[in-house]
Image (cartoon, rainbow, N blue to C red; front, side):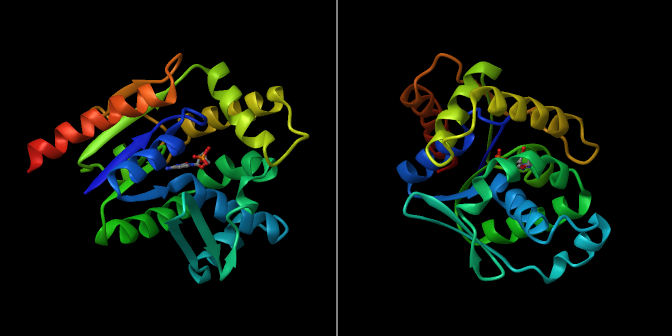
Length: 221
Ligand code: C5P
């Protein structure tokens, strides 16, 4: 079984998906982390020509695992879980994610990963392009100010120099690129349930979604 949560940056998808995974004792998949991993790889290689970079991508060994409340990512054996959360990676990730080779690589990885377990996954195009037959689809949204404030609070913990304005500009730019790219743009799936989290507490929005999931599970059994 797979539950997907799509939505723009900072809408609370990852923290909600993690909380759902913990409550229901299922696996969590953070698709944004995988695009961040490819972006980190490209930056670490010195921003090579994209055609050359994507040509060598099949040689890359990507591993991901949800454990101890954290989504761990390993690239060619190196633990890059922390490295993918920098502002530099955030500034380039939408550019890398707009390339079809990056999307094919990440999508294949995700489709293989979810084969053997029950997952809740978060991203941009999961309900529309990657898992169109998902058992349950959510689309989370919130105002740009609220999303920027949340992401800022999160980033402040590891990067004290980042400003709220920088975070807000980055979110706006990423939303624009993600919504307007040719290949699998960020878009609500027709059959997704919209959850607007503006003004809601985390517990409220989580309980709302858990109730929908439990209802769905009851209908399935
Ligand atoms: O979720 P997160 O903000 O970490 O995602 C980082 C970036 O990865 C997004 O801004 C988007 O460009 C890309 N992404 C995507 N498709 C997904 C998940 C993330 O294009 N399914």
